[in-house]
Image (cartoon, rainbow, N blue to C red; front, side):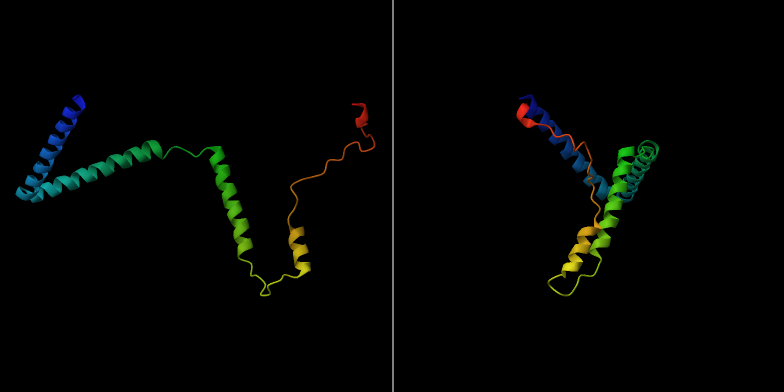
Length: 124
């Protein structure tokens, strides 16, 4: 019940505001436009002050810098691959396939352990 009264009150206020704006527009157009321009300018000025004083000083975190650097490196790596001209033949030659496979360095390495000692699994 209270909600209905409140929403009706808000609608009445908005309606009166619209009527007032329309009346001001038709009766005193020059003053209305200068007031609108001044309000917009003041809003932009306040936003600029808040942005440059409070928001601009925030520096990116260390992780964000690392992420941006990785994205840049990845883009440069994969754009170079895509720009290479492709051979006109439909079937690539076998030698070219081997070269492509050998180009990439493996990110895994083999760790040599004690190969001479073998565990006897039957005793477990």
